[in-house]
Length: 499
View (cartoon, rainbow, N blue to C red):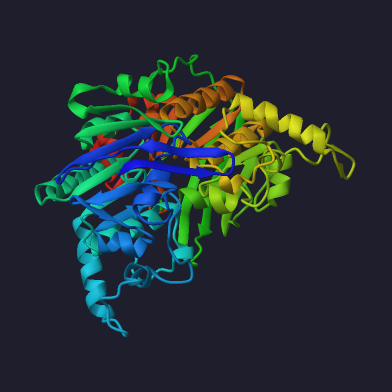
């Protein structure tokens, strides 16, 4: 890619970027949220058209006008915002758009090939499930399998390990190395510094749409990379006050609930969470974490058991009643649940506090005060937006996440249910989120933290619970946790067998 530039209203996303990828090479692409990484890759895979610049493959200039053109040249991408058809099942999404398939595809053959790939790469998925029935993590697995099925020569992977156990992430690394030996290449977008060192051969760092550094991976370190990304030292270890929990904030007793497909998603879940405590929930996405958060926040009905918040029975209460009881929720799916794309950044920031002063007087909203309120949060959380009035759908994924975080942290009074709060955030923003959670804990709030990042759980949690297929496999003190044992519990191994 030579001198690639791309602009959106009020934003220069890519500014004369040169990118080279060699055969059999893995390039890590780093940068803060809004640095232009996804835009550059969307140009390469045919979703965007560059304003200026040229693309060459095997020394020949090519024109990529669509994803089909990219596929023709052997380029495929797993996006953060998935490109799947919700009303179709997994098998139909896998073969959608393939011209080599007959008018009436041989679905038995497709199923067999898909299940072989799923088994090979440990990406378990129900081939007959509809996309709308799948969790965010399960949908990402479908995207990865879709690329593998298409035999792409250049794979663009945007945070592909976010929903994998440590063992599965290592397996994906072995797969990528095998592909390298076959002459295939990959561009790996991630915010995990350790993954950059483990997976890549070369690193390119973007800042505000420009390339600011490029180096062989062997000649750098996580701290150096973090400094290049954010322009300052990033603390990978955060100091915490001693664990001193107070009264019980949240208590679940024998909670059961059904998933979107009508099958059991939560099975006899019982635990308590106290004020001044962070309880981390580990597990491969799709094992009941989303359903657990939705039951607690009133978005899903439980079929059995009781739920108490601050000693008050809140079983199957409405989301508004839960909110009024001081509960905040950072949801798993920021696009469809956490934010309203057609509304402004300011309106999204005001969603939890628009019912009362100073943002409203009775039933009358006060636009100037909403804008003033939004500007303070935009500055505090470093949300990259042209203005508070910009529609949130025009922001990068990481900045949408920052908007949700700003709104929910400001609204939490007793309990915070945070589901993958740092997913898609750069290393600097991730550090800030972890500090915010620890500060809230120190101020006496109870925090339920669902995360696929085991380093994050070990760094900020006081206790950790591991979920598998809707059950708690074990609960233990974070200080006594072992990352390999957690990975085995996430894969379904019995706690007694590990001990």
